[in-house]
Image (cartoon, rainbow over all chains, first blue to last red; front, side, top):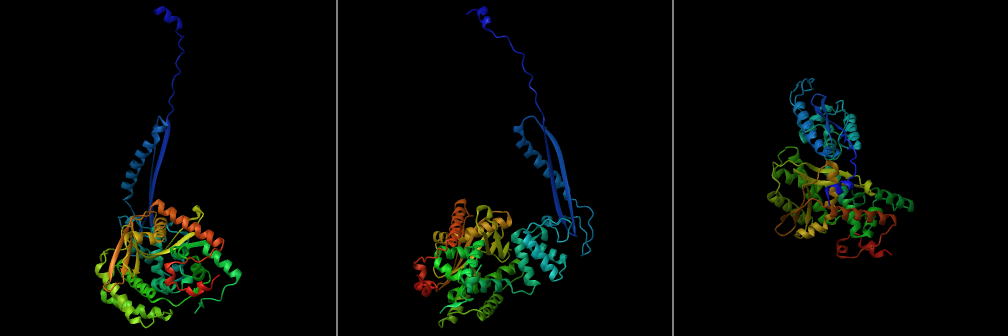
Length: 187
Length: 272
């Protein structure tokens, strides 16, 4: 095969399509809200935008930015700034342990079930209890405020409140006669 | 002697009762169902009340004292052996006010056994006095509606620090690990599911603390791994069977060794 012969089979070159790379804008926000003593809470969030050239880069970029933002938020949120005086007359620059919140704060999100929340509030209301006292009890028992208690902890708190304030039989008296001796009404 | 807790239910009363029993399920109900459906009928549907067996009474008082001990640590209060002994004797008297126990002249011997078990436990327990529990005697539940199952309810004896679920048991024989794991699997799986739902965390393990009534009492602690997916499937299938069985009112007896200690022996023999 000669060079000339080869040339005869050569297809005319099409002009190359210019590859256009679309930038993918990746926006991430990290927000954290912490309950504080003295009926307070504070919140801080950081948002960043980043560009990736390939959709496949998103998981890695998300991972990187999440860590970055979390570190940034955690670093700043430790400074709680001004706090109104609580019932003990103290204000503190230290965050409440484990993000402790209280029963009276503005944030109405509870981590326990709605039923548990209603029961706690009902016990407090029916017995004219001081919410701050209940908050202190939760902090003593669980290291965090009432609203931050999970369902297991809230159940423990409810038992404690019933025993302490509601003049109901203690948990052993409630449980064992029912469970052991009246099987029909057992749990 | 049959002493119904309430007047014998009418047909509509039974239907209502079955509906209630299908709305929720507990480990003890499931255990009873799996042991014998006719026993379940007498106990949970007709709600027949029988005099308690002494062993059951001893078990309940032992549990109540262990609970006081756990609560003491939870509340950062020191509870000494003398105080616990006093609690034991007080509870022993108080609980009998409303309970009928068929002692057969053995009350004093049973009382001695009960305290001996507790003394042994407090001496040999792996739980140290400064270990604060995560939870003591807590009512918990788990919504299983996404699996098409009723709500799971129960009370967990103790959750040790770090998420180890503990159940106390009194027994007359020394348990082996395999036997204990098998016999109590439904119960431990129920607790694991409720713990996970209540805390959003997986339990780090489960412990069965057996207080064994021998001449020389002893404590056997059986550590179990966290619930596996397979165990969860077995439990869910068990609950499915429970719901379906109640639905078709399947209350046939399951004769076996457990009949020897069944309080409904006479009722069972009359069943047809």
